[in-house]
Length: 587
Image (tube, rainbow, N blue to C red; front, side):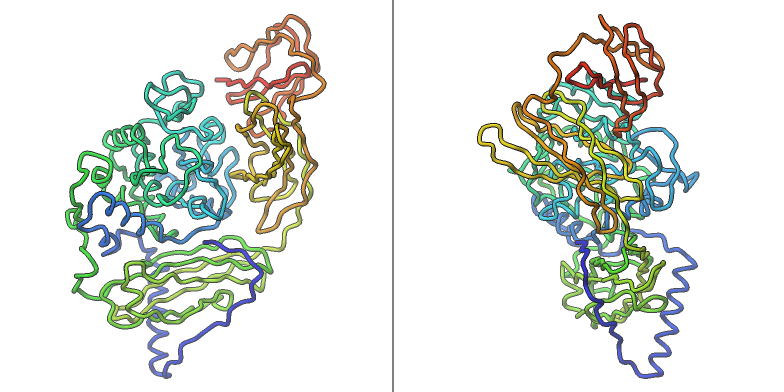
């Protein structure tokens, strides 16, 4: 769990060691740190990491996967682009983003999102509640299912389930969105179909999520179930198993799995064992899974070899990201071994060790050897601005040598956030509407939209809070407005634990938009490079918005046979004489 708080720094604790031993220890630690810095250790499957899965089948196997992968370092959402630079870079050019949602070319901008890209939850965050820390913050920032995505594809994908498209509404050559094939969709009007080369990637991602977060209560059950230990429902099992069989594990997935382990301290077992899904959902249900068949070690309870540290591995990096001066950030690092015959010692070593703290300096071998290991809380409490780093060194326990974990963070000034301006809602149709606002004038992490929903019968009000994926967008689509309901919303920006003052309040009353008696006839035809307007009379002022809510074209008077040139993308056309905005896709 990531906790942002106004904590005082914990005292820095040291281990009392005799001078000669201390000298040798410092030489050992210096050698380990130097070697790590020089070699840049490449992660592989740690010996014994999967031992808890050995000899299990069915629900017991899935439960063991759940216990294993849920124990990971929960990252901060604002730091994700820093991780993506390693988890989702192109091998031919590490500065280029590997986007599984489009073939457009994007380049990294350090810890900032590339223009035109979002952080995309491949399993939609709305399915469990998103940022809701009572259930889902770990899933909200779990980079095993978070990928960079071109923003138009991300918006088209929305929160639709995976599936195969029968009637296409959006197609950029990689992402297809449209009505589902018969028997698919789970009741959703549309599905998202990735390109064939990525279908196995998404299937293995969903297998991971169905195990890691099987304890969640799912709000949307297009592909999921709250009443079956398999978590996935029947039609989605058929689809995902077929996709996993037809699209084998790629080098991209293997390399990404290694990079995820380096930062998050866990792995996707369905990448390491490509047939593992068959034992839970596929052709080998009921059969016993043996880890040894894949060439890794067996159960820790019968282990008789040399002492080993399963987690963390050499080269693990905990990047705390950006933290404002005066605030603290906690990360949890899971320490787990097998065959350890002495307590493990922990020490913060070199550089900015005084900016970081740990509550203990040793872990008993009994706890470290246990199935769950030991959850070590590491706190970053900066006292000066700038970049800070240190090393957490874990040694003894009978280990040969030691394991070095790199801790890095940046301390920035307390941000100054200006009040935003909320704009009128657009795309009002059925249960849908698009909440809009003006972009912040300063750097922000994301936006927070607070709604009040008034029950159409009782008049009682409830408040709901939603969060954007990035600061790149200035709109948020809602699809839960019932006929006759009144909704209000205001918007705030968020940066480093601080929020701006609430914006003005926008109201959608029971009739939707006031001041319009009836829609005037309008037809929008798609043509190469733009649209053609067909209407029986002049319609007056109109505005075209992109899907981020930015006005891209103002028109004084919309008239018949008007041709409007537009780049490829998804747009909303709003006129002064129509209740609803027109959604248009320019190819």
